[in-house]
Image 1 (cartoon, one colour):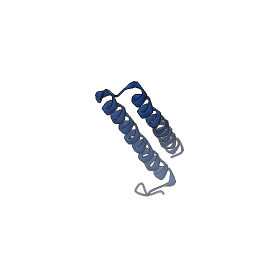
Image 2 (cartoon, one colour; image 1 turned 120 degrees about the vertical axis):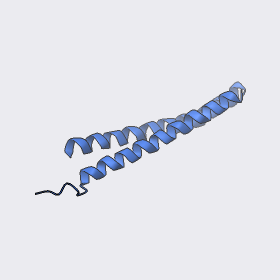
Image 3 (cartoon, one colour; image 1 turned 45 degrees about the vertical axis):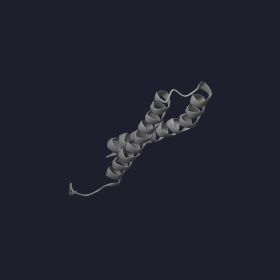
Image 4 (cartoon, one colour; image 1 turned 90 degrees about the vertical axis):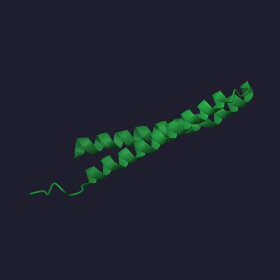
Length: 80
């Protein structure tokens, strides 16, 4: 008989995935705020492109981390 209070590997997958998704969400919010501040500053076109060029890889990385986290959550739920 399994004790329902035990912490299984699948619970760990779910919590790790939720943590990664939250980390990705923080990254996405950071990207949004960075671009929003740049737009409010009414930067010239070349400076705005430079800001967007720095934010784009971080935005893609944050999306990737969020997707991996959500996949871990789904795998943990299905296998658990």
